[in-house]
Amino acid sequence: MSLLQLALKSISGNAFRNGVVSLCAVLISAFALFSTLVMRGAEDSLRLAIDRLGADIVVVPQGSEAKIESALLMGIPARFWMLQSNLSRIAAIPGVDVASPQLYLATLTGADCCSVSDMFMIAYDPASDFTIQPWLKQNLGEGLRMGEVVGGTYISATEGEQNIKVYGYLVTLKSNLEPTGTGLDQSMFLTFDTAYDIASKSATQAQSQLIIPPDSISAALVKVSPGTDPHEVAVRILQSVPGVTPIESSNLFQSYRRQMTGLLRSILVILSVTWGLSVVLIGLVFSMAANERRKELGVLRALGATRRFVFQSLLAEASILALFGGATGVALAGLAIFLFRNLIMVSLEIPFLLPSPVSLLLQLGAGLFLALFSVNLAALFPAFKISRQDPAIAMRE
Amino acid sequence: MNKTMGILMIVLALVIAIVPITTDCLAHGRMLTTAEGMQVPMKCHWTAIAEIGMAIPLALVGVFNFTSKRKETFRTLNLIGLGLGALVIAFPTVLIGVCANKMMPCNMIELPTLIMSGILVMGASLITLVTSNKMVEPVAA
Image: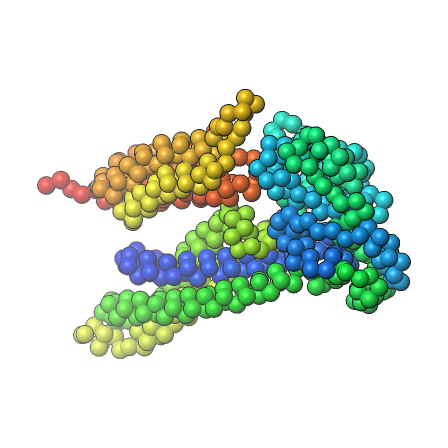
């Protein structure tokens, strides 16, 4: 009888031990994979959101820093305004290559004149924009005309149509951006002309008028000249333009990063406690099972099996159970993450993006390895102890 | 093993019956307004109702899995279980569907719960089918 056959035979005869060990392996691997996927997904999503934004510095009115982060990351509509004249002052600052204005708007809540409630809308200036236009040119070959919009990945028109009603105005959805796992996925992008047209017609077409204060913008996106330090430019903006806050892209989403760090700490504590308890429990269960099988293992030794063979057969049992439990755990955690990703985003208030297939496979492998390592570590001492005992004593007891 | 899977199926049947009807858009006070101004429930609500109909036979499969002893009974029951699991997934994805907006409550809770439950039901049925095949029938006295 080979080592594997002996291990499989032993496993088939102990349902309690199999259940407990497999369950612990399920817990360890599922929890480890779940937390890794969530934290890495959030980090990837933040990075992609900053890349998609494409700006080195975002200038917003003083006191609106948290609002813009919530809007861009979670799609929570934000309304804040600053004077349009700030844009020319920012553009004139040495080191600023391009400064492009944006308007932040939102649809009405629960109104028939809007297809989607509380949708965050970003209006951009096609003449100076350097964030949306390059994507449009690359994917559509042209910019947006009057009445045309581009949606985040979750923005869809009514089935069979291409139009979305905004303040009673029918806009045409030209295309959808790729997913970022952030609020940008639930946002709509349109030109200044379309935004002003919607605002002017909303007085008669909508339940409530869309008001864009004259000579106002919500934010200015700044790209610094090549070779210039964005921090120096940000300091110059702060000194030259009163009432605004420049946020460097490296400092963007700091509150969410702090929230994620806190979450990561809690997850690590829970993971460590779960891992420690599981290893102790598996160790106890293996000790009990090994004690029950003293006679059986003694007979095996008396029949000529070496200590090494007994030791290896016990570790082989542990590995089979760990592989079974670990595979179940990673499969369940992977499926749960994939299916419930939007719920996780909303309830934990963090952005989230699924990893690439290669990264996912690596993380699945790591989860499985952790389960295998933990179960073998727990079974090591009982297996070593039982393999060292004298066969004559073991059979007599 | 078969008894454990029987209990799992009963629990899943409860999840399939209760979770959709309490997490659909109607439960969150959202309805569709027709051109005539009437308010009607959205697709996700009808999926939730259909799933209650699926949960009842599924619970029975679970109960019989728990009480049965014969190989043929397990085989028939779990083939039905496989079909029911597939239908649990098919209602919200193909047959009826849920709302289009991915951020609606039905899309965030109802749909993933039903897909996950359907997969688990199919998995439990498959495991019972395989293990019952190796079963030794009790000899009649």
